[in-house]
Image (cartoon, rainbow, N blue to C red; front, side, top):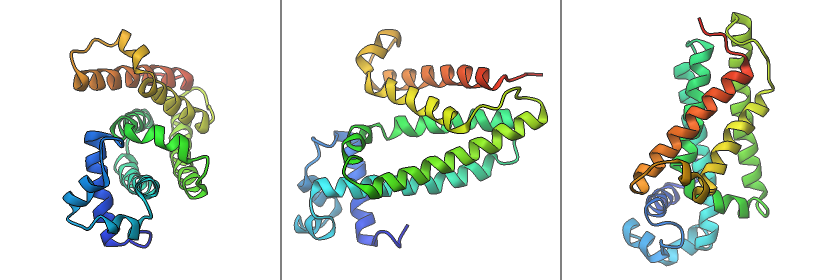
Length: 209
């Protein structure tokens, strides 16, 4: 991680991410970031070029951090039963997408222009696919899974369904009872997670004891 970013860049990116998570990209100014990071405004241009370019760095930084955490997470569930591993992976992916939902609109725009981001995401997706493939094969070998779907199709189902919910709140909130923003987010995440568990385990032909 520190080979890609300097300590000062990491400090600024951590502050920027914290503020953007609370106030959104449009609601967070360069001055807000600099004030909390205790740096001069000119430092944003020096380290990143602009606020817009800083977001590209921030997304790359977030992908790398999440990849490191996923590797650690995968190690913690490695000895579990395949059905448990699959359940935990679905929960992990959905929770991460909801946690960092403020990135998704930005990513759609930036991926059209930034090859580095495409490469970072490709590596990240392939890491997920490799782990899913291991779990699926382990489940089939042990008899708890009947079918062998392609792991990339499982990942596409999980990410695609979750992003649909995140990007189409005006539709999904019709089916999710909520009193406020926090309640809605929790209930929407719970609903799509449960639906994905049902769908993915059906695709796998899960044979419960």
